[in-house]
Image (cartoon, rainbow, N blue to C red; front, side, top):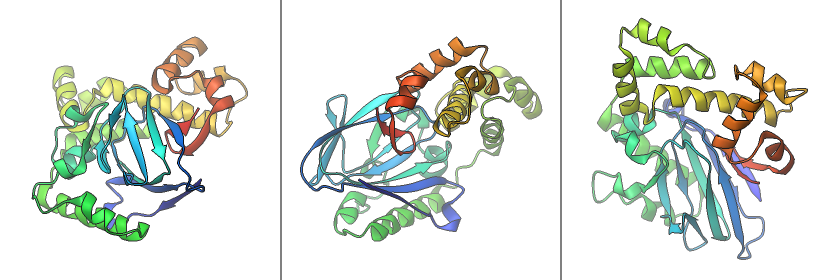
Length: 268
């Protein structure tokens, strides 16, 4: 399979974390299972159904769909060849770009056309009318740019809270963030959920898991205890339990069996 990344336009870099393309090296029909893991970010995937069908929980997904926060591991089944492109957003994208309640898409997805406010904005049709990856990304970038201009939904208070959690890899004291923002715990949780889609505590746990996953991917440790303590887990068993919750497998199983393809999308 062929995998590569494409840089988004400069004006979208504060909304888009990465853009990627995944193509079959062999055009013959086959079946494949992709494992997804909790990563704290929503995203978008385009996979033409006439080339290969993606499904989750026995539900066929549309050609182009947006997915919300993932708080647990899941499986995507693909039948046929894959000619897939994707966009990973930053955690606040569903609200900031689409003015959509992010909680409604937590551990779920939605046809992108259902998010379009004007009936003529049939994004999938436009994408299917070209085979050029760069033209397809240009269509998506143009659509996202227009959405941002139309919405301009920013919550600078919650963006600050989000940034503190991301920068600290989930280690920041939420009480200190609340105190700085002069918010009660209940107000902080309610506002954060409305803007990000999950609670600040769960978001912090996922960020900490992602930091430990990065240590594992880069072989940046001598033993699992090192990863556990570096990422503020109480002990190794606590780290392993948390890893299984978000990845679906143990850290050692992931290290031995995982075939990483796209960030947080792999075969295990």
